[in-house]
Amino acid sequence: MSVYDSLFLAAHDVTYLAQGTEGAEGGPMGPEFGKASPIGLLILAILGVAVLVAGWNFHRRYSRFRRRTMFAEDHGIDPFDEEAVDAALKEAGLYDNRKKSIF
Image (cartoon, rainbow, N blue to C red; front, side, top):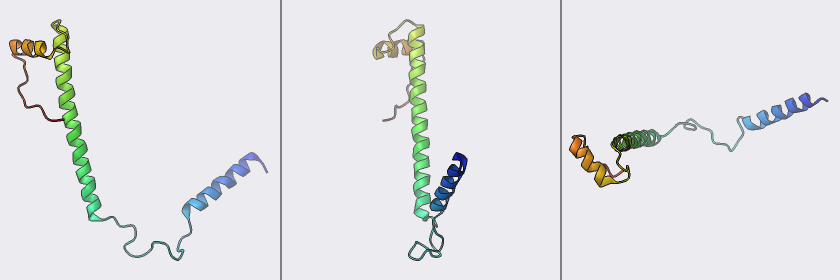
């Protein structure tokens, strides 16, 4: 028996074990087995909305950060000096007055 034959037999055995025995007594069978609950769909929808909101908030925050950093570097200001950057942005008329979210 060659190495390839033994690998084939091992793969065949794993496939057979992974499939399990169909129609075995005592297993979860019936007309409702395998059907998803409507509450599961609701949970997935809520998680999807949460991911979209988190992504949108991250994009806003990152865009604001990059805009402030580029402005500070272009004008020779320390990007970590918030008061100086805010004052320079207000002077240039580019200050962002939008409400900042808690995220």
